[in-house]
Structure formats: structure tokens, C-alpha cells
Length: 507
Image 1 (tube, helix red, strand yellow):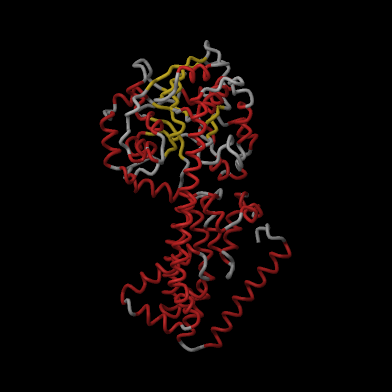
Image 2 (cartoon, rainbow, N blue to C red; image 1 turned 120 degrees about the horizontal axis):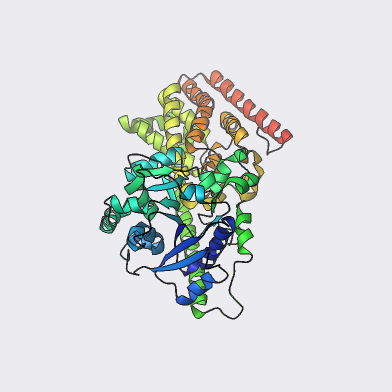
């Protein structure tokens, strides 16, 4: 089998673990491993090859020019080595017609032959998707792809013969990168999806490219025993990795199985370059953490500033609806857009209670119009939250939901109960609904299904609030008070039941 890996010195130890897992899980196979790089030394390759049977695994260094992609602005946050797989057709030997590309942060735990021998037909790549529903649609629009799901490029069977014949050259790839730099969020992965999207075979990620996100999303459908028996490749993508401190995933045991005896270095043999590489890796990691913290501080500052400037006025919806209605009327036909934007803002920052806005919506636009504009604003705000969660991950979630509190919601890991639990949570007036929206990206549920369930569940609560607002316009304070009392009663009953049954219950 032909294997392709692209690395720099920071991932040497992980590559050694990968090779050990590759040989251990495929005892009847032999491999030729092409390692594309621009910085490894002869000593590094000696270290990589130590302890590996050369009769079963031939290591082939593939030096790549250090200047390749050097002008790409994306390299400020992504190592240039990630781009090298795009050029596989140029540096692999002419006799190689197919290759399995593997990121260095993967381990192989079952035989690869069923995937290596896949029938490409007219396809160029076989890989797995890690995004679904809404994010799949967003990626399709962003990259203007005409077909196929957005794949994760960390594990791919590549039809090298077909890629050479398809007509897309190195120059074409470089030109595409230069012309689309602003839209390439995930660098070469975006390029692969954009250029080859309609000629990609989809493989079940549970079998071919299992990461923590897919494992969580599958809920009770699979467990670690199922993974042990069925999954070929486990992928530790993202910032949370088992060789780093405070790893929170459940798939670490597969990496640890092969890492215990994979360190071939002897005491005192570390080179100056290795020390420098480790220091560089730590510096890069610290830099990324600092950037993430600064970005989160900026987001928090913007939200706080906006709240200080407009929060008081928004709360006037409850205190003096006629004043705010007059304020909205001043925008004419844009009043609906302004309100939807305000509602989206409230959904994102959490500091402003939702019910006053909903009552004000009923006063300004009537029961049904108010509900419509509340729903539109909520959807926009929810999408913003989900996008932020995708970008900043658990760090953003921890601002609004402490880790201890999140771990208490055991129903979130139960795929069968999750839908009903979310429906009840969003159905009851007065519950902290928007906090759960920050968890949407981490739940074992498609984003589209999350939005559908929670959107439908919000309707009764919003309807009751806009009804109160409409009754206030008629000066029917008794009816408004009764509706408010019923709403408070429902919320009170929910709180009492939840306390009695325990906070982690579905209710």
C-alpha cells in the first residue's frame, strides 16, 4: 500500500505513533510511506525509521521546496506543509496510481484494505464528511460547489492516476488560492472541496475517519467497543489532542495504545534542532491561545459596550411600550428589520431578557407580526452563535456555560432523549434557552434539526408574550395580567419539578 503524509518536525512523534499503529493493525500488509516535508533532516528520518521493520515499511523522504506557497497569507495561521497534499501528483513517482493520505494526528486500528481497494470509477477522491445540515449548506454556498458533501481532507484515498488526467495543474491550484484567499477558511481542505467536490466518493466517517465530534454525534449508535471492532482510522483533529494536557475526548485510548512504546529517542540524544522545534511548538501554541483569548475579549467588549449603549432602551419595551413603538415607527418600513436585528443582538449577548422584547414586539406589531419578527431575529442570532461556537470552540462556550454545569446535563449525550429534552426546555417560558444555543455545535445532533426543534418549541412562549403586548395596546390590563400570571405559573411549576427530580433530568 502507498501512504502519503505531510509533516514538519513538530509532528514527528505523532507520525511514529501512526506508523506503529499502521503496521500493528495490518499485519499482513507492506507499506511504502511517502513523507512530504521541507524541513526534516537525515537524523529526523533515522528517528522515524527506528524500530520499524524495513521489509514491511519503506520510508521515502519527499523534499518539497520551502518556497512553495510562501506567498499565501493563510500561512500566518496554517503550516505550509498542509498544502503539500495538493501537489501529490507532482512529487509522487509515476508508477503510483493511488495513495492513502493520512494526517499525522491519526491512528489506524483496523485493516485498511477494504478502503485502499475502493473502486474509484470516475471519482478522484474517497473521503468522509464531518459537517452536516446547515454547515454543509454554508460551505456549498461559500465555495460555490455544485455537488457532493464537504469532506474532511485529513484522511483521503486519492486516485493519483485520475488526478493527473483530470487537467487541474499546480498552476491552476495556485491561481485558485490567490483568487479566493478571503473565502478559504480551512486552506487546502477548502481547495480540495472546491476543485474536486463533484468527483468525491463519500465514506462513512464512523468507519474511515472517526473524530470526537462524529463519535459524540452518533450518541448511543456506537460506543468504544463498536469503534474497536469497526473503525479503521481515528482522527484527532482540532485543538483538543490526546498528547496535550487536559484532553477531554473519549478516543484517547487508541492513541495511548500505540504511543507507549513509540518514543524511540534515547536519553541524551536530543539534538539542538529538536529542542528548538519543541520550543517553537510551545510558542506557536501559546500564540494561538493568546489570539483566541484576545478575540474572545473583543467579542465580550463589543457585547458589553452595545448593551451599555442600547440595553436600557431595550428594557423600556416592558416599562413603556408606547415610547419604543414610536421609536420603531420612526424607521418606517425598516422598523421590522431594526427589531429583528435587536432581537438577534439579544439572542447573542444574553444580558437582555427575551420576554420584554417579545412583549414589546406584540405591542408594536401585534400578536402574529410580533411573533414573526421575534422568530426571524432569534434564527439570525442563533446562526451567529453557532458560527461563533464553530470558530472559537469550547472557549466561547465556557464564557456562558461553566464546564461543571455543562457536564451536569447528562441528557445532552443521549441522542434518543436529546430532541425531547431540548423541546421541553425551549417550550417552557422563562428558561435560559439561548444558553443551550451555545451548546448546539457540540451536541450529537444536526444543526438543522436543532434549529427546527427549538424553533417550533419557542412558538408558544413567544406567542404568550406577544399576546400580552397586543392586549396592552388595547389597554386590557386584566387579560394581559392573566396571561402573564399563567406564564409565570408554568415557569414556576417547571422550576419546582426540576428541583425535585434533579437538575440533570430531561425535564
